[in-house]
Amino acid sequence: MKKLIGMLLAVVLTAILSSPVYADAVAGLEPGQAMPDFTVSLTDGSTATLSEVLEEKELVVLNIFASWCGPCEIEFPEMEKVRETKKEQMEIIAVSGDPDDTMEMIDEYKKSHELSFPMGLAGDALGFIELEAYPTTVFVDRNGNVGLVKIGAFVSQEDFEEKVDLFLSPDYDGKPLETEKAVDYSLYFLLWIVLGGLLSLIGRWRMFRKAGKPGWNSLIPFLNTYREFSLCWNGWFGIIADLCIVAGVINNLAGLPAVIYYVLVAVSLFFSILEGFKLAGVFGKGKVFGLLLILPVFRDICRFILGVTKAEYRPNK
Image (tube, rainbow, N blue to C red; front, side, top):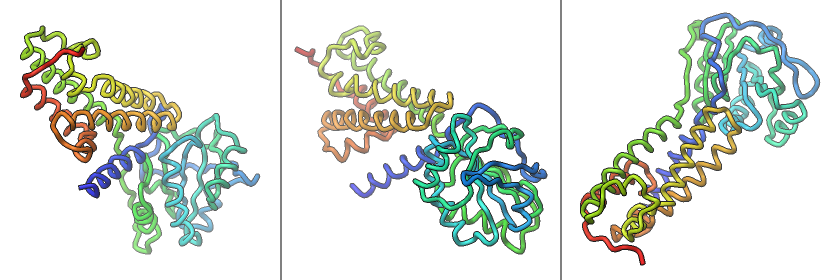
């Protein structure tokens, strides 16, 4: 059971960390079109020009990131591994699209993450690309055409290497791949909050009605003075957890630093676990069951069942 919980948590965290950090525009490249030539400045003082690199390489992978972007940081080591084995045929050029990033910051970033491929700043050279999210990766094939646009991070070395091998294959016919867009799990979190809120509202309504109290009490849970409320819903823990997720969604949509989003997710997870332990106690279950209750839909269904079936209530003293 504990291994299962660990796997579930790993899946949830991977989904969160691989979600793209959204910028404020729409991607401006289409697979199959000729990639406009560009020259970007690099951390070693040199420049990289697309057409010149394509004279020596069969594939150029342009990665547009930001120094504060968590998903970008996750995919770079995987890209580095692939590039090390195929650097005779392909090149990665990673440039920051955040105007607040400086060359000194990117130079330090490159050194601290032990990355060997060229890195620098996008500047005005890539102004023709309207970013939808960080990271955005553009594969430019041997013909100078856009072969693939990837919005969001590559979550594994295998995923990235598969795309690279396709464009380096002798059988590559120049046909582009469709734009890939990583799932933005923020919308799913928001859906879970809405669904969970509805189920909780119905459950609380039933609880108060059975207790002979006005149903409207279910609309203001933090003003409730009943012991069963603190046991079943653990009011403030659940409220804080949900507010953190809502704030995380707003943070992503506003394009604020990703570190804020991850801190909010961590805080939400912490209070969700505390809430799960409390609810597990009401069911007479242990902490293993409590950890399972951090899964949004499972948790809210349990809250709903508890709310519509439990009938004895005692006021707090």
